[in-house]
Image 1: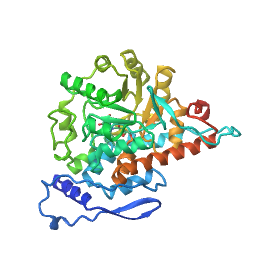
Image 2: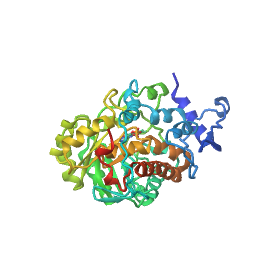
Image 3: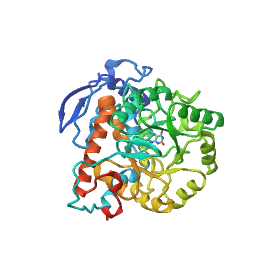
Image 4: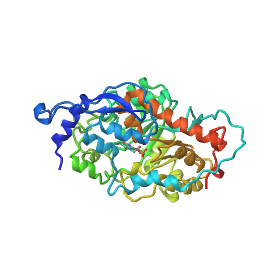
Length: 402
Ligand SMILES: Cc1cc2nc3c(=O)[nH]c(=O)nc-3n(C[C@H](O)[C@H](O)[C@H](O)COP(=O)(O)O)c2cc1C
């Protein structure tokens, strides 16, 4: 078993990490942490993440994980990269994209595909956004300031989170681009109200209500590593949030018996469109819409919650059909390739979100790193659109996949 102390030793190593010449395009990092015996007792030391700020030369998004692993300490890396249980859903999220093939339409005269689209009234440059992920400070010292700026600079919408290490007001300052706010519903209705009002006054245009984490999933990497969120990386958007605790301990402040009526409450209190994040069945999605949801984000939390639920791309078409053409449906989970984005859009997603590669590219290059990652994915999408014969995002329809 790895002890909590090892995790903190890892944290020290991240501070000392340097980058050296690249392999295959992505910068390679070397961890220069001194041996534990040289460090003395650093268990109480503040968490120190990397500070690199640079563009990345990325061949593909899969390469980022191994490079980021060299920089991010073991405990936080396990928390970011890991899934629940046997990690079947985690792997299936990527694999299941292969069950669909693209049917190109040649001679369509497409030269420069247009990736712009509109997400719940916000104009964006690309149909790719950054989903809510807790504690960006684990990846980089700039935390959500870096990731939101990186997203904005790539023309992508950023979803700020309840469990950010950065106050919402500072995220808004760092990224003037379109933003949503993800709500973890606390047991205190007053805190929920205040969070939604702050989100609104800092320019967030929708509330993303995550419904698949009333209880933390069985994250075995976290148990092996004794992972706890570092006490020095607080969650400033929730008053009196516990610090230095595990995910399961942290979740004691959130409501466990969520129901459909909570959607009604959020819609009424916030006055913003509510995106329910997590439905995997048509029936569940339809009921969310009946209770005031404006959109659905098909998601299995990146395979981190209930293992063996279907891949997001498997659940998507049934939900799109069930809610009908007027309800926007988004997808996250396993999106790593431009052809994945293309397939999700063809199956009816309005946009997709990319989780872990955002944190890996943040660790490797700060805001410019995140921009590089999103630009790499966008370039792959544009190539797929050119080769398949789609001039704009709305041209990508179901006839393009089988
Ligand atoms: C480190 C990490 C933390 C996450 N924290 C949250 C969170 O606070 N709220 C939430 O709704 N989803 C959270 N998620 C799930 C993501 O929003 C998204 O569903 C998932 O990362 C998509 O899968 P992908 O990483 O394969 O792209 C988290 C995911 C990761 C990797």
